[in-house]
Amino acid sequence: MIFNAGVSASEEVWKNVDIELQTIRRIDHDVQELDLLRQKSNEQGKTIAELERSLASEKRTNELNERELYLNKKIIEVKDMEIQALNRNFDQMKEVADRSLKLAETAKPKSNWEVLGLAAIILFIGGMVVGGL
Image (cartoon, rainbow, N blue to C red; front, side, top):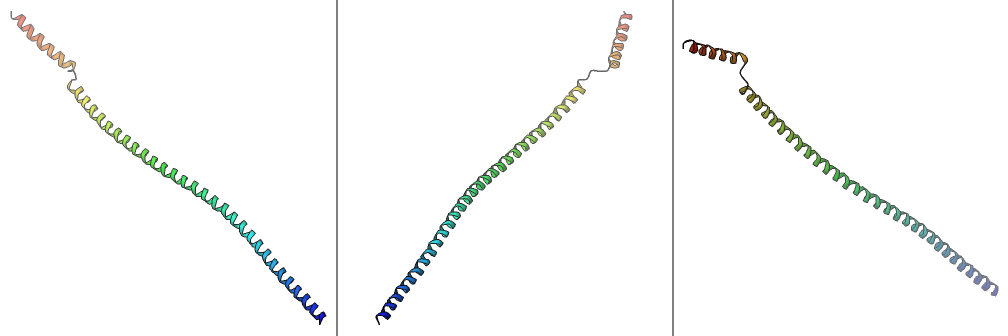
């Protein structure tokens, strides 16, 4: 019986050791899983930080693109105003040119034949007056 008691106690010890060994293996497995989860969490944190930087960069790019579009719109508006001003100036220049032509036609000196004819009439009349005296 003592032998049986010793065997039974020994078996009990080995069972306890086996249970403890399984518990240690499970704890070791859990620790390894925890380490893997920490590594994955760190990688995800780095990925998130990189995505946030990328998002900030994209937002800045969008802001710059919107600013560029606004400036291009303003440039087009200024060019349209310039074209309108040039068209107004062109119309005014046409009016000035037309007025100049009209003034040139009315102030145009008489032709030489008209002046010579007028001089001949004056001489004829002057000759009649002098010849009749």
